[in-house]
Length: 346
Image (tube, rainbow, N blue to C red; front, side, top):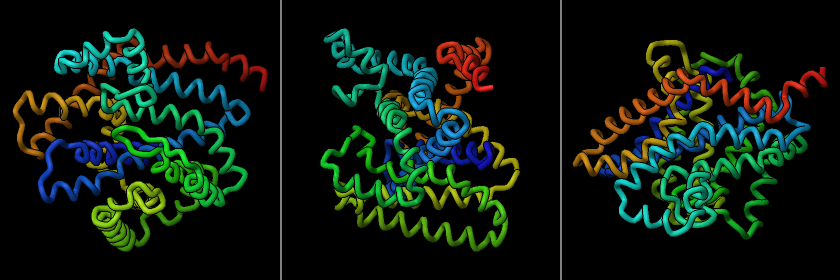
């Protein structure tokens, strides 16, 4: 899978996410928002796929180094966005300041996205950072499991999640088990070069791929919207596998059908801002929608999109002017002594 494919998928996923989290619900909007609840699964597949390539490139024998590096990069991408969101919440929510004053640990715990372990997170989108910390910590184990057992790791993971009595739950994000299958699929696709094998089928029988993919996705949306809410607490009958299957269908459609064009290029550029937009959009929906008196879901979505993208553009401009990304990379190299390790390996 090329970088263009991944950026395009991230662009689609952030559009789905912004609509799924829209604070308004019409009759048709509720069904569409239910269908859009595949955004996190797409993000996680791309994340697991990328992490796997990084592990293969030099961290198979250094899993702890991988974990430290990914956690530092994760925090470096969200901390100043958190500070802005924190400032807005303190200004808007009269109960937030007493919460942070009640204990000197509340602010660092919330900023480090550990609130799901100790209490309610004040910044709603922070659940995903908390979730990614767990993903990073267990990723080497999942990587080695997939490497040793290949595709048999799928039933193994399903069996583990069924037997394990503890279902790790994230407020606003659901069970960790919901997402484990798509993470394993991302690892397996990267380890087994699935996209490289599928490349020969790109742009062949496009009508069949499009119609079949849309039909299957529509059926799964209906199944999840009508049948699964009753069984949500039972992993193998709930959102996890159905959403993973929906995500894989969308990913394969994009890989097999995506062409170069102006619209595709715009979505790819949007994908570069997906992470920043993820961490900024919820403040708009939870605060500014009410301050501005917005009462229409389309207007709310469009303005949230504009707000999140504008904020991301500002963040990336500041990073560019301060050489922020290079400073983080160089700092990581010194911290992890990667240059010395490469010389020793050579």
